[in-house]
Amino acid sequence: MALLLTGCGSNFGFPGVYRIDVEQGNVITEEMVQQLKPGMSPRQVRFIMGTPLIEDTFHENRWDYRYTLRNGIDTLEQHRLTVFFEDEVLVNLEGTLLPDWAQESTPDTGADDDSDAEDTPAAS
Figure 1: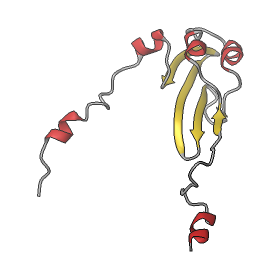
Figure 2 (figure 1 turned 90 degrees about the vertical axis):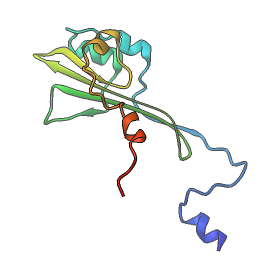
Figure 3 (figure 1 turned 30 degrees about the vertical axis):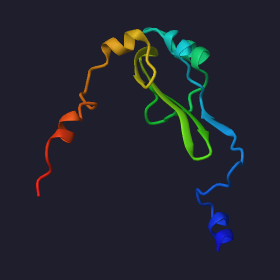
Figure 4 (figure 1 turned 45 degrees about the vertical axis):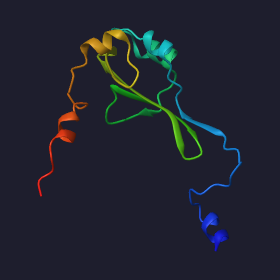
């Protein structure tokens, strides 16, 4: 029975078994992101960040960079960066790592303000 459970690709692991770190996507560092400036050409952005993981043919002015570091089933690190161009010029960035200029221009959506929901008693 135990062989059937472990042979089906379940998330049960053997104790003491080493799991390698698996990197997927584009490595995104704080240093790379801080080099991005408004007004840069797509060629300059590609020089700094590398080829984007996703270049959507339906949204040619948007490049998506994703990075995930996993150890087995545990996600150790995950970053996302979306680059927007207008008229072949960098105009905006969205994601988990942003340069100082993009953080100032990104509006606060208030999505992190879930503290009130925990304090309100649930209706029966």
